[in-house]
Structure formats: C-alpha cells, structure tokens
Amino acid sequence: MAKGSRHACFAGARSAGARFAGAFADGVLSGTAAIAYRRGDRYHGEVLRFRRHGRGECVYSGGGSSYAGEWADDKRHG
View 1: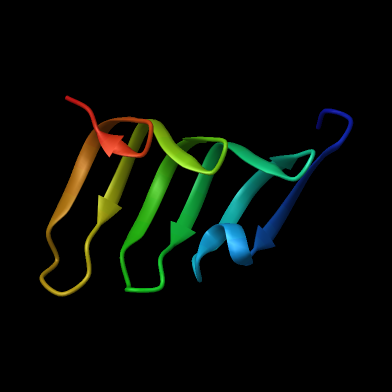
View 2: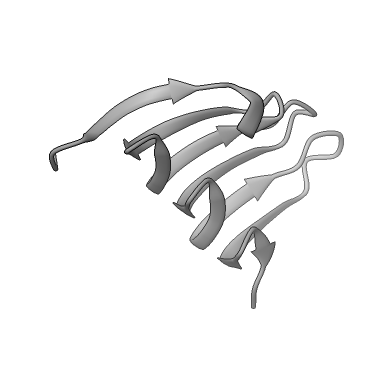
C-alpha cells in the first residue's frame, strides 16, 4: 500500500449520508470502491475523488434495475 493510503469506511458531510469502502489517500477516495447511498442504491467499481469514474455497476433501489458499464464524472458514459 502506498504511503498515506489506507482502507477504511467513511461517512460524513462529503458523502451526504452515503457509506464508502475503498482506498483513501490523503482523505480522498479513489480506485476501486463500494458505495451505499442513503436512498438504497449501491455502486461497486472505479471512483476518482469520491465520484463514479471508470468501469462500475450501480444497482438502483425500488425495482432492481441496474447499469453496468462506463462512468465519467459521476454520470453514465457509454
């Protein structure tokens, strides 16, 4: 693990009630992570500075629909 990096769960003001699990470096979540959002949606995949970015899957609450694919700046991309 790189100096200054750690694995941890985080929930705070930046997360707006979401829970994050993944690699943090200098307090910033980047790399592969799991995110559980307050409304029940769940994401697992790549993140960059707390935002979905790269390959990942989001399973939406209340119906079981999901999106698996590319993300850019926290939005579906592709």
